[in-house]
Amino acid sequence: MIIPEIRAKAVTLYGKKAALVCGDLRLTYQDFDRRVNALCNLLRELKIQKDGKVAILHPNCHYFMEAYYAVAQLGAVAVPINYRLSPKDVAFILNDSESSVLIADRQFTHLVAGTLEEEGTETQMVLWTGAGEHCPLAIESLDYEKEIQHASTATRAVDDIQEETVAQLYYTSGTTGRPKGVILTHKNICTHALGAIAELHLTDRDRWIHVAPMFHLADAWATWAITWVGGTHIFVRAFDPSNVLEIMERERVSITNMIPTMLNLLVNHPDAKKRNYSGLRVLLSGGAPIAPEVVKKIVATFQCDYIQTYGMTETAPYLTMSILKDYLGDLPDDEQLRIKSKTGREFIGVQLKVVREDGTEVKKNEREVGEIIVKGDIVTPGYWRLPEETQKAIKDGWLYTGDLAVMDAEGYVTIVDRKKDIILTGGENVYSTEVENILYMHPAVLEAAVIGVPDEKWGEMVQAIVVLKQGTQTTEEEIIGFCKERLARYKAPKAVEFCPELPKTGSGKIAKRQLRAKYWPINNQQEDTSS
Image (cartoon, rainbow, N blue to C red; front, top):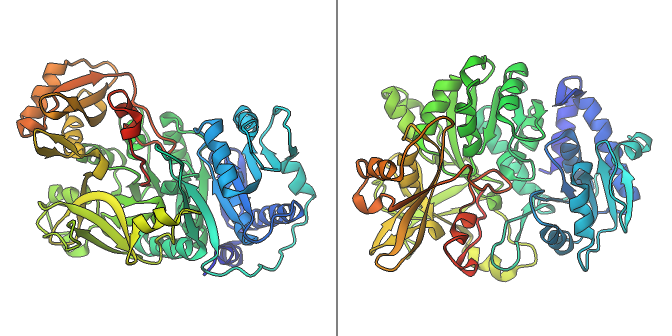
């Protein structure tokens, strides 16, 4: 299975069906196919061949999806880039991946100009999308839309693309040393897409809204799975809660995956319960743990099924889904919701274990904590040009995730923390997610993060950083007391910092590394590669 087969199947079976909705633009799969062919032929003219690299710096848009498919058609490698990075970081990715062409939206004109000023940048061409002007560049640039209007729309025979051919490079946000390029092959992508189709019962009736950024696999996987079944893609350029809710209602969105921070802002929006979501059948959350209290609000607000997901860039991405087993459907509603709020049972395309440090499996008692390890056809073959890092992460075919979890008798896992996020206070382990879940139960709390900070007496101290809902008030003492009533006293925060907003990563997750940087030397920080 290779990615070009996905598009071919969609055009054959669903050619006249609505494929893409992007603002006022609506395309059928036949329309989409012609545009992808034109871009593919244009990239050929720009000397992109098999194994060549094409970088993409773009908000969610039909252009992004066209680029993903055109690059795959050539047997070349797509390099999606987080547009929140600095010019220095973008330049590193362009150079490390050896990307010769960059497809960029004109809203990033200054970022691109700054990137190309960095020493050693070797990218040879920029294809600009969108309206407006862009800064003069030291390298050649072309207008994407004008060029594909004149390019041939003939379908070229697929070159010698194999399942093991590299399809994409996703760069993790390195915090010490260099970012790492995660290799994903055609086999990784296609196996994951088929697994998602089976797990989520995707069909041509589904309408997926791309809200989480497409440079991140929390959303990008749907680019292939939804297309394969002839579903409809709806694009949102930037996350704005009011706009997202309006589009979900108007376009009768049936399914999507969002980062927990996004879902939390949606359910707390004053208009959330005023709209009609009758087209919505299921909402997924992924990219970070989610508080059970937020899950309750999601189900109450959207009146649809809910599935928690967990995955990594290295696994294309899903490793678990909290899909309720059929025979558990007779349980009381609150017990069903408790199960759905877990991280989930293993995804169909992967084998998963939770193990002790000696490699033996933990007891399935929801108490013993171990590290999640996985293997399967969705797991990366390794990191781009980093054989030592690959050997550290993948041992005897098993990928060590760095995520700590417990498992129940039904095989559902619950992540308790990243290894790097455990707080060791007075000789006791405190898992930040447990404390955060309690904080989200407080009626005044909109967002919360818990970190460990240096403490002379205890080694580390539990520190909460909290954003309050608009129009509410509370105090540090009240928050700490609230937690002490629901947690062991040593787990409760010793201090609470109130702030107007929490820093986010490019994918929308809360950036704990930035929060910790205030208290810890930067060289103590580690990278987060989870999706």
